Image (tube, rainbow, N blue to C red; front, side, top):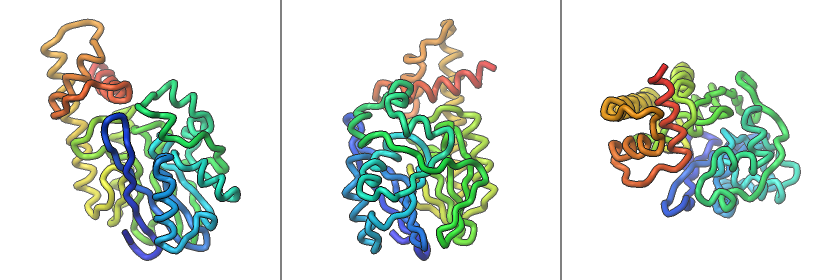
Amino acid sequence: MKIVEKIFLEKLVFPLGESIRNVYTVLIKGKKNCLIDTGTAFNYNDIVSFCEKNKVNVKNLDLVILTHCHPDHIGSSLLLKKENPDLQIMAHSLAKPYIEDIQKQYQERPVPGFFNLIAGQVKIDRVLNDGDEIDTDTRLQILHTPGHSPGSISIFLPEEDVLIIGDAVPGTGDIPIYENVNQLRSSFTKLEKTGATHIISAFNGYCTDLTKLINGGREDLNNIDNYVEEYLEQNDKSPVDLTEISGFVLQKMGFNTPPIKIVMNSIESHLQNIKK
């Protein structure tokens, strides 16, 4: 899908446990060809086809920017690097340790099928921080937008009025997957200030209403706050059973699946915030 001149979007589908998930990758063509996020290891051939469809051979990619360290965003990076050793891979300083050492990431954040989702760890060639700019013909501004993960970034292209947000705004009505709800809310405000017209979300794909997208994220976070408070009113256990409260929240959201660790981390963030 063509977003604006030289900027293309592709949906990637992959298995996660017993479910099917999706994520999006972005190709920015220019004097330096840039790929934003690399899906999972399952998606390598999809990425090759996507680039070729838009007249870029992966051997002619110059840059990969990873919006954060999670498996569905870094999974094909090593395969791309093997195919193209000159490829420069970039990520935020707080994401770097978890991309270069995937065992460390797995220990802290196990997800179903983790090592099948990632082809292997890969070296970060350039560390990115808030306010950095990259020139590819197109000016890319790096925004640090933590919350989903500490090292999450978004990429703003002011001349093209395009904002690529990775997982900075949760998928509307989706299972909660983030680490710090307060940082997430602060990142919403930061993204709003761009006033971008063309928004690309790794959860939701392409949209043109940034306000609606972010308000949907805020509404979901507020609803989860309410579910956590409802649970606490009904249960006076101390300490709170994190598995039980997470299951309660998921049921209130309409999910009948048992909570996994990454979901419980999200609920714990709400719990800690409410208890302050």
